[in-house]
Amino acid sequence: MDMLGAEGGRQDEYSPDDTSDSDNEVGPPSFAGDSQEEDEDGVGGSTLAPAQAPAASDSVTPGPRRSKRKPAPKVTWWEQEPKTYLASGNASAAEAGWDLHKPPENGKEARARPDWPLWQQAIEEKVAAHKHLGTRFKTRGINKNHKAIKTRFVFDIKHDAESKLTRYKARLVAQAFNQVPGRDFDETWAPVPNAATTRALFAVAAAMGWKIHHVDVKTVFLNAKMEKEMYIKLPDGVEPEGLEEMCRLNQALYGTKQAGRLWGIKIEKELKEMAAVRSKVDPCLYEWHHPVDGCIFILVYVDDIIVSGEQMAGVEAVKRSVSSKIEVRDMREVRDCIGIKVMRNRAANTLMLSNPKPSRRCWRRSGWTRRRQTRRRWRRGSS
Image 1 (cartoon, rainbow, N blue to C red):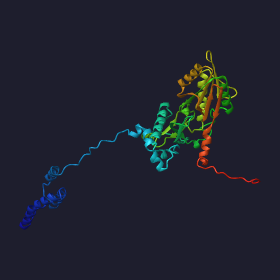
Image 2: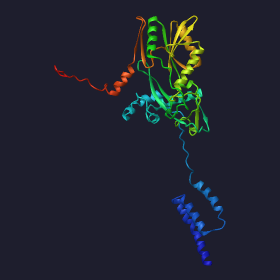
Image 3: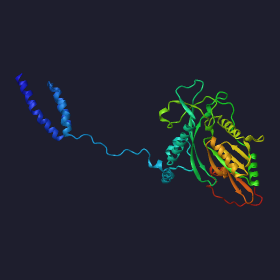
């Protein structure tokens, strides 16, 4: 026992020298070695050692460094100035093979393009419009007889009559191929006038010298109430807190079968409240009589409304009445409507209609813009 005690004492005498050497050489690993030796020795009253070890480590080794970097701003510069970002990204887009003159096919492609800030802004505007109009509301449960319809964003680039870019547009569209006739919808039609009616109105206005103004309805289908029980599932990223919840439609939505019909009923009701009379020849043409300003004609082409009359005051009165009930965009004198370019010559009382967009689209798809004209000599008698 005395020999063991002597050996134990020698071990206790030399152990601090070893640990001190290790402290000078390595540092923190020495404490792990000390704790391991104490566990092996089984010394009683070792509860004070762990309490003293952290204090020694704090005094010897410095604590973890804290980062002094500032957090990233919530709004980046490309979100504040999207046009500047788009101009700076044209070179990289050309190198990557992106055609920024065409809208993206889906949301994944829009996020990968350098002009994503502009499309993101368009999506945010559309989501805000849906919340303002109360298009949908969340529901915990869903009717077993109705299946939720998926939705996606459809993108488009709007141009004016001179083919100048005006705005980027995003539209939330329902994939309504799962709708069941009779249960989800009854009739499918939209207020589209006859082409002869449109040409006749422009011809009479040009010959009589009438004013022709254009009014564009914002979020046209969202203004009509949904008459059937329908549920939708929002795309990813619209509302992160409620992705798993289904939403029931309050208003008509783009892509649904009955959206055009519900909007036609809505605009007919609003115009009849203004005392406008529907034409018996074309149901999309209305006539409104003012006791002072005379007769005003109103032509409805889905979300485009043409207002024509002799007096400017009567035209402005119709536009004020429509804008008081429906949110619209006043385009002033018509220049581009339903894809038709309108060119008017007041001196000659003429008005010319042109539709160059479909022709240009066909040329681009067929590749005529990239082909060279070739000349070939024809011989007599050759076929």
